[in-house]
Length: 255
Image: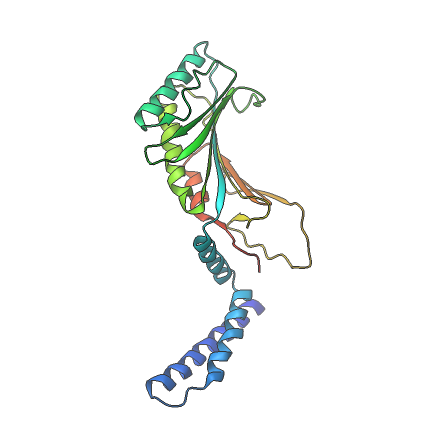
C-alpha cells in the first residue's frame, strides 16, 4: 500500500510539473527553471520505485550498447536403435542441405558415436559451433546431446534462436526421439552486464556478490535457472522457450 501511495504522489508531481512548464511555454511567460529542475528528482524517484520503469530504462540502454553474448541451444535424443549413428549423420546432412549451411575449414567427417565437433556458417555469414556427444548424459535425459553455440550481439539472439529451431527441426525430422527436451543459455563475460529473465535485481553498491543461483519452474515442464552472468532454461516443449528469449534482458548497469 505504501508503495502504491508513493507512486501516485510521484505521478501527480510529475503531471503538475509538466503542466506548469507547458503553460509557461505556450503562453510565452517566464519559464520557471525550477520546474525543469524539479523533474530530475521526480524521474529519479520513479526510477527507484517502479520496477517497470527501471526495467524499461535498462533494457533500452542495453539495446543501445548491444553487448556481446554467448548463446547456446542444446537438445537431446533418446533412441536406443542400433542404427542411431546413421540416423544422426543423415539428420545432420539434411539440416545442412535445407538450411544452406556449410562447414568452415573443411568437413570434419561423420559422427562416429562418440564426440563430434564442427564449425558451421550460414549464407548470411552467421557462424556457430556444433557439438554432438554421447558422453556424460544422464540416462533419463537421453543418449545423445546436440549443442549449437553462437558468439553474437544481443540484438541477434532472436534470429539465431530461429535458426537453431529450424536446425533442430530438420535434424530430428526422420529420427524417432523419445525425449524431446531442449534448453537454452544466454551468458555474458564476468565483467559484462547480467542477463535476467523477468527479474529485477538491485544490488547495493557496497555489496560485492561473487556468485548466486536462483531456480524456479514457470510451469510443469519449463525450468529456469538464473546465475550470475547467465540465464538457463529447459523444457520438453520448445515453444516455451520463445518467451524466455523474448523476455531475457541484459541490464547495462545495475544502478
